[in-house]
Image (cartoon, rainbow, N blue to C red):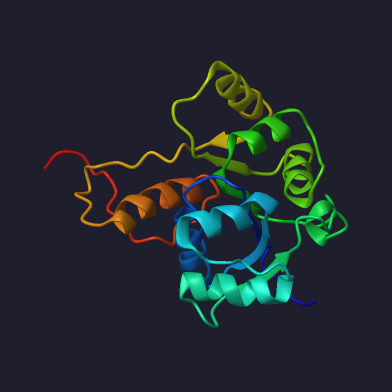
Length: 207
């Protein structure tokens, strides 16, 4: 009997500011040899242009090279990119087994659509599948301040089983760089999926 291949993790990227969170997550996950199924929303293209003056390719094959270049990981792990409009992709089906799904960064527009159960694109459909199958869905919202509507939508997702991990860094590990702050958030998000592949300093109590 052949060994069961490891389940993939879905990494979804919406059009919120802070794409560095997705890049750092991808860097560590690929370096740790994870299989990643990646889908980026249409708004992500505009955010890349605005934040980094970089044009993200639209074709999935070109996107794979693009994301590997951004993460600075050439060969490790497995990465498959999907078009946001491809609602017939593997991750759109509950029969495609996964470790779960991480939406990072997650815009309030995406939060609202997920809370309403909408599936107008592949990102939304894949997230809806995780919830209906009882799998892990981790949301990393990147917004401040939250309005009452935002909070109610996030509460709805939490009640449905999603884990909400706001992009709020800690300071007890004495961060020295922006990457140190980002990596802490990414590590805490991955903790919700029982993935430990980022070398951060964890709280061990007072010494």
